[in-house]
Amino acid sequence: MTSGTSAAAAPHRSIDPMMTPTPYAGPAPHSTTRFRRPRAVRFLATYLEMTVSMFVGMGLFGLLWDAVWPALTSRPDTMAVVMAFDMTLGMALWMWVRRHPTRHILQMSATMVLPFLVLLFPYWLGLLSGDTLMTWGHVGMFALMAAYLAWRPHTPGTGSPTPRNARPRRPRPAFAAAVLLTGGAAVAVLGGLLHPHDEPPNSHAAVFTEYAHSTNWVWIHDLQFLSAAVVVTGFLLLAQALRRADAPAALVRLGETAAAATIALIAANMAVDGVALKRAVDAWVDAPPSEQAGRFAAAEAIRWVEWGLNSFFTMLLGVTVILFAVALLRTPLPGPIVRAAGAAGILAGAGLLVSGLGVGAHGFEPTVLPLVATTLYAVMAIGITRLDRPTRSTASARPADTGSAPDTPVATQTW
Image (cartoon, rainbow, N blue to C red):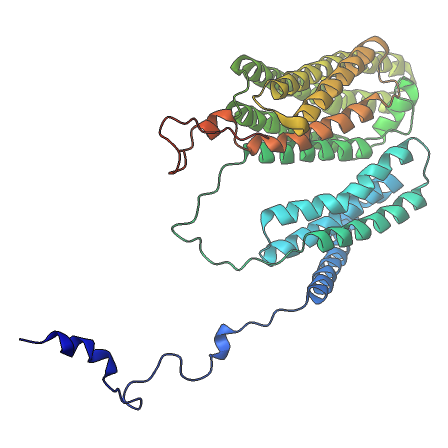
């Protein structure tokens, strides 16, 4: 039987330091230390990486375009868009190799393309020359890239697995919808740049001759249909985000139906314009003089069918945008950004409606209304990303804090 004093005296027993090594003995291993470069050095290194990858992409993809499509860069606007695309793709591929987060790759890509997209509008209006477009587009690209890297430094990913107890990532359908809606619009702008447009579109003899000499007509219209398919896919994802945000189900269902009808009309329009009209104008140009009048009348009839299809799909696209914009405004606690996106969407849809009515009445007359509608549509697409935040229903479904009373309601999170 032991006494109580023996236990109290136990801590005073001597221990031979030579027999029991301490875990704190010796210097820290070199493998656990990591040198962290100053922020300025990291910024310059990242900026240099981005710049080199951009020029590599421009060189490699530029050679590919010269071999496959030599006439692609014959105009200043198409050259600016293709060059910005090549540089952005080279940078994005290098960031992917370096395992940067996907959102950083998308943000940097948008930052690089933005100056050229902004400067295209004054160029089309005749306010800028081609040399000015190229010069200030590159200046804006490198300046915005430097500003963005200084504001939000990017670092490559570590590639470490996600811990088991890590919080699962919430789905982000609104963000995916915004990427598809803006990406589809960008592809549509590219298709419009590549489409022959030197002659007045309602001067049929001149414009049919221009169309007949186009060697990439079918591929350009395939690209335009692809852009429409991407946009409609974005609307379907937006419908999913609106359902999660408690938008009225009837409005969302009507928007989905209108989007499906829109892509069907666009497919018919591309078939008439991209295939039938091209064959008709080719036959008119190659016909003997005795048959040219009849061939020309057939081409004009197909052109008028294109007027009707283009008019109705443009109006239906406007209705689709308006339905989704109203659904945005009807979500609970929409917040100022979502309200601005909804208002921009309503204005964009109204512009598309007016533009479609004008095509049906007067044909393809030059107007800046589609450019204005596209800009407002882009504002709506960017603003919908706020839908990924918790809504009233998801916030009220969260458990209350342990210190609150059981009957105390959970405060809803505002946007």
